[in-house]
Length: 158
Image (cartoon, rainbow, N blue to C red; front, side, top):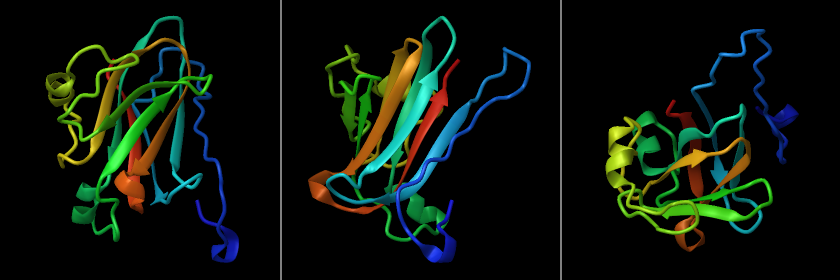
């Protein structure tokens, strides 16, 4: 998405499955943006639908973007996961160090590696969660109010 005549502002991109097949699955959704400070952090939302919980991995990627020619990658992204009420339910800074609390009750490093979606840089963040149906928000910030380009992703782990 780009503003007409390179204007800037906050925008929303949405993806909907309009197919009649109720068994379809969106395997991944991601957003790349410039992460700033204060209220100008990166926010990605997703919805878990159905009647049963879904296992997902949410990632905040920064340093590894440089290998794809992305300038000014966010050097050390942090990740927060919030529920539909805005309550913080999980957080991570540096995926190889699990932050126990909220819905995270045990070390996740091996599960992240086994998912096939482990971040490529130790300073990037990841959370695996088994989420009940509902709305969720992932927030990406830079450690110590740093800024840069980052990617926030959510994968369905089936």
